[in-house]
Amino acid sequence: MLKEVEGIIISETNYGETSKIINILTKNGIVGVMAKGSKSLKSPLRSYTQKFTYGKFYLYYKENKLSILKSVDIINDLVNIKTNIELIGYMSYISDLTYQIMKQNNNEDLYNIYINAILKINDGLNAKIICNIVELKILDYLGVGINFNTCIKCGNTKNIVTINPDEGGYICKNCYTNEKIFDEKTIKMLRMYYLVDISSISDLKISDEVINNINNFINIYYERYTGLYLKSKKFLDTITT
Ligand SMILES: [Zn+2]
Image (cartoon, rainbow, N blue to C red):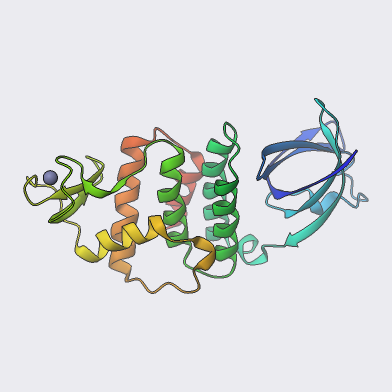
């Protein structure tokens, strides 16, 4: 049976002398596919089976067996990302993060967040911001989402004075002790990041200070609450400032 799946290749493993197995991140989860002969120089599949190929993959589908790749139609060559080491770093990390959840739960919403983020980065939008938006949205899927409505200590919805990554949310005037103060713009923008539909973003006008405050907040929150230690994140940290 011929089957069509849309997605991005997130990893490849050599199989024998000339073949490889590719893993495609799709809206239905991770699909493993045998790409026969794809390492051979003459293979028409050779250039379509590299990591981060985004396309429609046509497979000979086999129930309970590895499907065989027949052909690929490229949807977007993602050339702006693939020619920029920093953007490759972002794509690797975002892919890795998405994979951590998709390997256990197929989730179409998460797939859409992932694809839209990659396309926006390829279109030239600020990769740090897009990456932070994905990180914030993914927290819900990791089961450690941030409550953007009330003080985490007393449930108060008014007089929020800061947000604290160690305690995990808003802190109101009555509960405030000596936490670091994040300014109002940062707090507001953090919530916007969480709520925004990535596909609708056309430009981003945010000050460097707010961008960096949010990035710091998310880094601390991730270390504290997610238990994720991804090599791709460490790599990204070494190539970005
Ligand atoms: Zn409170």
